[in-house]
Amino acid sequence: MIYKSAKGWRDAPAKRLLFFGMSGLGKTHISNMLRASGEWFHYSADYRIGTRYMGEYITDNFKRRAMQDPFLAELLRSDSIYIASNLTFEDLSPLSTYLGKPGNPDLGGLPFAEYQKRQAEHHRAEVSALYDTNHFITRAKDLYGYDNFVCDSGGSTCEVVDPFDPDDPLLNALAKNHLMVRIEGSPEHEAELVRRFRRAPKPMCYRPEFLSNIWEEYLSKNNVKEEDVDPNDFMTFTYARAIAARDPRYQAMAENFGVTVSHLDLAKCTTPALLDELIAATLGNE
Image (cartoon, rainbow, N blue to C red):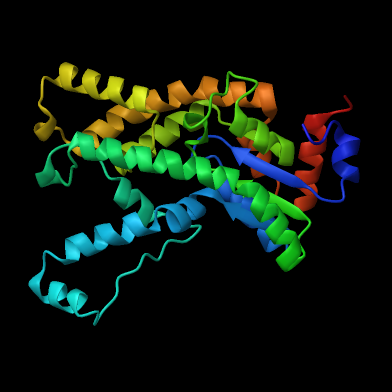
């Protein structure tokens, strides 16, 4: 770890953090708080994915839908209008919409092969976006004068690395430049995340082997064909299993490459000074 103790953290002239954990635990909230202080550069991995690496896929998907309308198709062919994504740190809907959900096309579902292709695109984009953090640390300092840097990683970071391998190249690259901080949820909070997801299922990114296995399990358990799958029902079916599957991966990332803080303790950090104290207490005197 780049900070070996509370003293090392407090005395560091430049502080660099990378938060990881399930979506909904406060990664973006705490990163926004640091950015609002005026002393931290906020790097959103999801924003980088949706703009730099998947922006063309996203806008092409919009155009493909627009081309189905003769009026819009004529305007697009003549370059009379343009279509763009308005993806922001707070609203990643364009990226989620592109990832989509597999199943019945009449219910907005994608063929499973197309869904797998988009998942693979996201996987490659997420790896690239995470490797980009070192470039943005330098860029934040050179262009804007920021010494402090926070990386707000995506909820699927644990899906694109091998957290059980101490020699994983991406995790080593990240740990070399950031203090890796896992935000750990409670069973009660995880149950609440599942309840929220049931009310509004959204696209997710999964490891290929996990996705293939869960897809076959769903088809077999419900005795349905691919084209009959309710996309929202499949996403809900998968979500709770994804939480359970990701938890040991997040834990291994923290044990091998960083530290862990509770989402309850993190929620109390309403200022950078309070976060400083939480990180110092977590690092201890070792």
